[in-house]
Image (cartoon, rainbow, N blue to C red; front, side):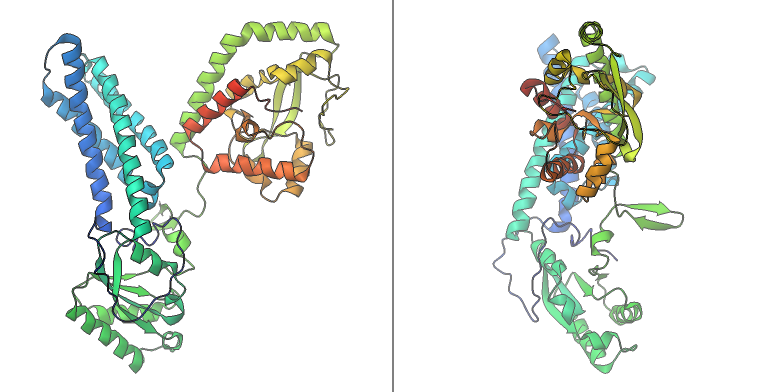
Length: 496
């Protein structure tokens, strides 16, 4: 009996405790705004209207501007309907219309972009399969894609700002409820605070002593409290009755619900502190039951596919573009010093699995074992050419083959040698979280100045903090930004 869809108990962003008070509460000063439970259908309707409008505008504008004719607008209306219905259905199934999701604008942009690309590609594929693609202008299709995506992002920006303001000012329309709860929970529950922010007004609050719940029976006093709540629900226009009782009191909860069953209004059990942080998580079907997601994978399947496609395309493009430079570098290394052109070293990658990273050799030594000394400025082990290769990042270029191999990404936490990895895990408690994604040739820590030698525990702690921030807030646009900053600023991804 979750209140997630109605009262938004779990749709919070920075809940803080608020004391509950008994008796009537005057909220007549509230300005009537959008009722909280209208948020999801309103945003869905907005998405549908925007997509249909963009389809019509794209079809009319492009055809009229390019060939001077007015196209059959019903065709573009149908396209808009198909695209909008599919998009909203997918987003609704993923839970992206929940208020907690709508408040996170950047996550919304990421999810919306991925789903929009998928919907448009599916519609184009269907058009080709049915051999009706010639009926649609490619220019109008591209215009629809970019106009639709841009308009949806602007709409979600407005929604995020509106919801943030509404929650901070308590501007949602009032919805009268009756609250029955344990005395010790009423005064310390963040749920009450969230209810008020979302417009749910407890016009009467009935406190129940803890001993009344542990007696093993419905006492005369508890029976009188429930009776008073029933009378209040009949005397006032009440939308629902809410119970804030520890879920361990199963028998009492069932008994109270039976007493309240004479009321023709819904009764909801609010999550207690033991389950509140889990009940709003994504759930999966497990046979005939379900399970709440305690920890999500850092990236969804769609996000991993997008990142992998970008890695492969980007790595191939750079290898083709810079192959003459890499060939010339290999020749210079052979002329500069004795030893192989390439240097392989064991490092930890995704999920802590080891792999062999490849670089252009920049040192006289080929260290790879349990003890590896970090490279330092002016290190005598660095060759004459190697010093220049490391400053210009050219020594990192062979890692593009690691990217194609699938053990690295273009962007991600920089992988450390296994010897250093074992040392850093002892210094930083959450160090292993860096392995939740594939390591990268460059990363968020590197473009923020944390690169090369790690002289102090504080420097590795800061690097880990930035890497975890990247993982928790990943987006495709973040990867693009990191790559541009790496190229423009010329930051050296590593110095060892």
